[in-house]
Amino acid sequence: MDKILDRVIKFFENKSIHFGLRTSLFIISIFVLFASDYYFDFTYDIHLNNKIEKLKSINSLKNIYKSDSLKLTELTELENRIYKRTHYSDRLRNLDLNQINIFKKSNTTEIKSPVIKNDNTTIKKPIPSLFWMVLTSNYIFIIIVITLFVLPFTGSVHRETKNFLGAIAAIIMFIVIIAFVTWISYKINSVWSNPTWTYIANIIIHPISLILIGKLVNTKKKKN
Image (cartoon, rainbow, N blue to C red; front, side):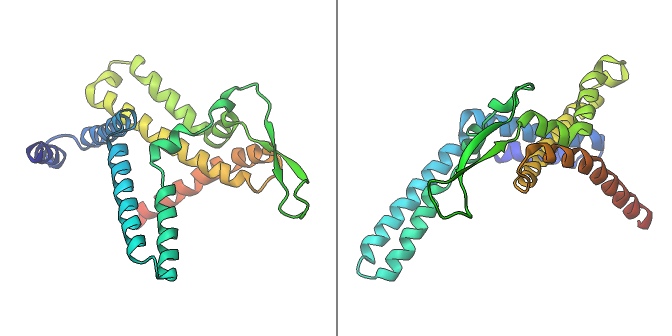
């Protein structure tokens, strides 16, 4: 295992190999490892075993300090925190992707109003469509991803190994960025009572943020 790791490190440190090719292979390798771990549960088993071991240890400590109410309370809180910890794969699997339908109207869910003390009083809050959240907050990135998918079919230059792997690596990076930006958009949505306002805000914020990032990068390049 150590020899394999040394070879991998030497490969990425080898300056005779084009930097773009090394970067592309690094990103693709990370993606393959992540996908393999997600589907074969390698780290999930480690997470579960660690969780069980920690709970056993806390249970043993609770028996030792059962006469100390303060320590017992602290141990119980720690036990609950560890018990509630979830693996990233559980969070991804629990994502609700039923909203992907383009023509599906936003659903509504009944939640208790935090202002009115009457527990029987409920308000309806629209749930934003996942499709429109992704599209409105990432439409430029989506166009870039589609372009990268098409590039290998537009000429022999784009079918060269380094360019092809570079396109795959770029697609993976943009998919990660799209997921992150969508997550931020859902946080913004909590401010609005109507998802339509979130969609409009996403459409406006997306290009403005890219322009600001571009200007920041250009400013740093000029300083260097």
